Length: 428
Image (cartoon, rainbow, N blue to C red; front, side, top):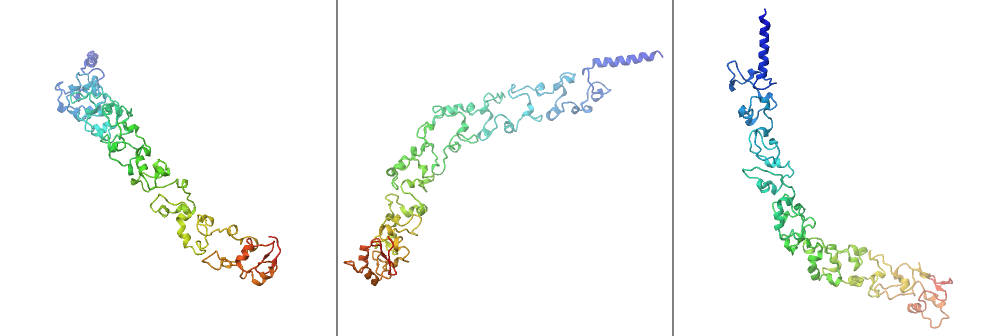
């Protein structure tokens, strides 16, 4: 009975000795049988039941075929690091960071999606940059030295030599911006042509050109003026229909023209400076007055409307010798109604005793063909009544010309014969 405690002590001692002398280090909790058998300590990989997936570092990709000792250089497994750099030499010399998984997978070191990865960087690749070779920008790198030092992301950082060698225009002499995107499109495959952002002066319609030198005559492109006359003064000087120089037209072409080729169509918003267009004149087509010839166009009524004047028979303007200044009677809105100043120019029929005593022009002008012919000695002033009123007037004659000669304003001594033959004594 005294041997039992001794045996327990021996077992406990053996256990403690084992814990202290385990080649896997203290705290190793994996069962020995997961790797070893009772046949010996040697490990039969075919019979290995240990699952690496139960650890904090599951084996994927090429890691599955790697020998344990390549990572676990000692039997104290806990000392094996879990970072890439713990096992793999940094071929990039710490220029891209320690996280290999940003670019590589455990299946292969080859990177097949470098463009996609680059899109998540400080400089996403677009346009021509997407097709550039890595070594075009990362010049310190090579197939044997994968040193990708961080690069500047400004245009000038890579294109300094392009900037300095460009002479047409001379970027350096003209002190052009070193931010290439102010003029060039970052997605383009060419520095010139359609790649130039010319939005500050749109190259469209008549300004659509293929050769920059058509406008930029010197290497200093910045000195080219956007003012119309700087390019088109010869066109201005040579134009004779209408004569821009003689008429003093503004040299700011866009005040009348658009950028359409051949300058047409054109507007003329300053027409009122030369001839005011109001009323019906404001809606008249240019050719109605100019007929395609903008030189020598008349600016008087008769200059355009003489044909209408001559053709008018009611009343006949030419026969009646009406003035050719149409505005004396007509407005610029329309020909009718007309305002003929009969009282002021000839005989008062809208005022005085004749106001309201007639119905139509023919009451006094029986001949539409000649308004210079008029009559007073009709139904308005019968001869019998008129003779009685003039019995004491020497030289009296009953005819219209004589009436008008003595009564140019339709009155005589404040008395006037009305159309009923009675004498009105109302003072005129």
